[in-house]
Length: 584
Image (cartoon, rainbow, N blue to C red; front, side, top):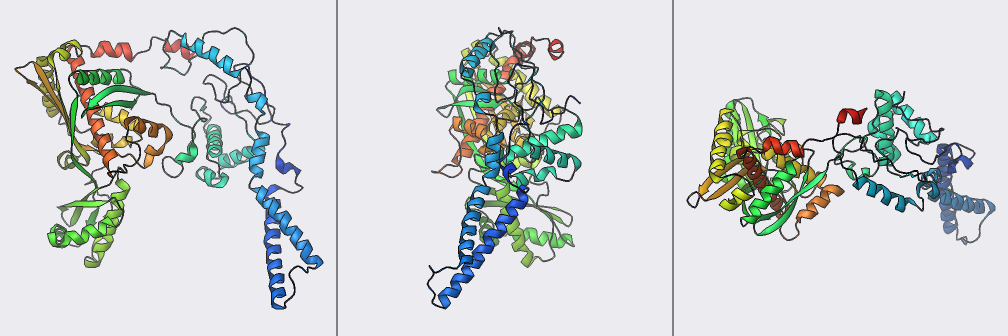
């Protein structure tokens, strides 16, 4: 089957001229041992601890009988020699696999050619000479080059054949994963090498499914950084281009906004909105509220008992006690309020708390668990059905988020000059105001929209979230937005605003720690936790998101008012390459 990788005993071949790497001639460090590696390891482990025990026993006996320690018998000399030998082996054992990998690694003259740098410059010059954009297909082949010396790069090329270099040990592990004897999820813990685990899992997946993953990159990613926090059982990573919109002039400061997207025209449109805002003196953004929520559901035997707990939680005399219990979960978590709702004998408790620079879902959940444990003392008949009862409400459109807010509640506004509306946005103030009323307000109401009184806030929110390591699923409630437009100064200028009650962002934890996303946060000046004022970086990021949404709304509405939407998307969101020919 062509999709499968070649056997490890065959030389590596690709569509491009390359040097072969025969694997059968490579020796492993463990091949010099007379026994299998795991048996040898067990022998030396046993020998080491046995002689240590023996010597300690002998020396304790000498101390008890006042015998000089330097007087040793033949058995003690042999034990000391065995101790030194086993210690040296064990010290080097943890490096045997490392040494083995070094020996199995292709030599430097294969992977690194003295002419690599010069030849890569030729490739770059040729690539820059391409006249057709390459974004719609994997086949981004270069124009024909004159015959040159073979070029071998460590990074895979998209159009080369699906091949790999594996050791005999890796081949055995792959077979055991395919057979089901080794769980795929346990490879990282068993091997201690996250990238090797991903490569083995990837190959096993291809053999099981018969489908090739040659277009999915494996190299060039730090798999250690996602272990236990971002993604389980990785087999590669997806590449999403990052564009920059801006500068966005917000609260007197300029920001270059990173946007990760595969939708053509989105970054260009947002960039035009940023230009219009900048030429008009900038935008102003205000944080209205900052509090993450979690709402467990508990059940009692009667509605009366559920009401008793509701009254207890709403009693001001109990507030301080509940806050102390909740705040024990973190030095940043601070309880702000508890909102209760009854459905029969079921009670929903919506906790709200500040979470510093973290998005805070885990933080608030721990605090809620503390309070539930505390309440069990006075309400032993309380049955905790779930720590999340969907009254939070997370990753779902909900009126409670639209009305009460969740995460950061932000309003952002700008006054766009009439000249800028005409020259940059190519429309008029009157057209924008009318379109906003009929589309964003009336049209959304006709559709029964919940928090969707805008043109495309979700587009900008998701792009910024992907670039900065936020949870992209939370774009559901984070995109709740109402866009308002009004003619001012006798109809000459335009007042535009976006109100977003539930922007859920953080600058620490989760995907914000990955290198690419961390770099985008650093670009905005909000990387990591704020040392001066806890929570300042995440609040700043929320205002930037709102500012970017304002720019995106302004530009798209202008394109719609001027009838430019279809024309601009045909220009920026369509490739002129014949995809059918490219794929063939």
